[in-house]
Image (cartoon, rainbow, N blue to C red):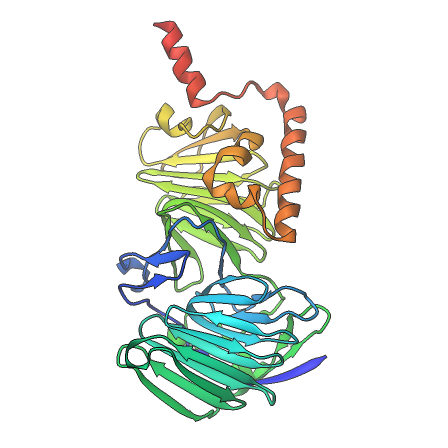
Amino acid sequence: MRLATLLCALALVTAIQPGWTANEQVEQGSPDPSMSNEAVVRFNGTGKDLEVFTNWNQTLTLGDPKSGATVLGVPRTIIQASDKEVCLYKGTIVVDSAASPVTIRLDDAGIHLAPHSSAIIEYKPHQFIKVQALGSESKILMRIRSGLIHDSTFKLRSNEQLTASIPNARVQMEPLRAVGQAVQVHQNNKTGRFDRISEGLQDNIELARGEYPKKVVFDQSAPLKLNGTSGTEFITSNSGTIKLICGQLLARSESGDVIHTELGDAILQRNSVASIERWQGQLRLASYCEPQAVLFKGEKGIFSLRWGQELVVTDHSPTWGDLLPNDGVARRNFEPVAASNYSCTLTDFQLGSALKILPQLAVVRKPSTKNGYKLRAKLIKTAAALELVTGQRGRFITCGDLLQSATNQR
């Protein structure tokens, strides 16, 4: 068991300033006034997963569980991770490099942690970067790419803090002063994850505007994985939920999450996979997992979806264009349900055709991780099983079939 003592007062990020472009995967749109001035995050179509921390109990291990770096994020922090690198788009993370070096990429800087180094990194794009070197062996190299200090390099050792103000290029180096209680984090060498956070953090940390409960339930869950088509926009809210504004999202939740839309909420239970589409006047929620794992919450209660079912919610009487869009996916059994004050229609969709065609499932078709390959194999097997078990429910049709039928009747 390796013991690292982390001294911190973690600051929550409440806004991204206009003009931010977050590396390769997301960029900023216009702020939404209903979400505490939180800026819109927009996918640009690179097809890589975003990791969104939605609760205090979420960690991520990079690479080998026994020797890879561990990342703990404050709620609303957004990152993208590979085995040896983390892209921090916004927010605050605690990083322990363990036995392997790790690089943190930002729009305005690069931060390299040598093996056995720990740091707290807080980042507000185009505003400031704060790096706190923790632990007795920490060695951190930071290179800033902004303004007057273009490519300036700084070395931080244990118990040093660097704050860089990006717009005016001012850098301040100082000894690290503890603000509030010391935080002790035990990391298990076998799993590479943090086992617990001390009561000092749970009872004494100052949380911005009381947005989160002070008691932290720490159960080693992972952040929410999101992948969206180009132009998809969402917001991270104060409560840790995601608000989907428009576009197509594939969401994989390990700890349980909520994705909010104006037409209702998608509730994702633990270890669930769902596709959520939001267009003008329409919401489409599709389940890729067992019953009771993906739920829709409307004004009339909570409605459960099962494997290969989707719920179409419209603010108008649904048309065939709503129920059977021209996306190549075959559907059947269009059944109105009373799940909301809006018009709701429950539909079966052909899981196999969705896996082959839908753009938001590209990350499932071409996985890059071991868990990704497992998910793909599971969905392919389930698609085959559903074809056998539910064949009596009728024939699947596509939008093309409907148009052909209408043409033949003329």
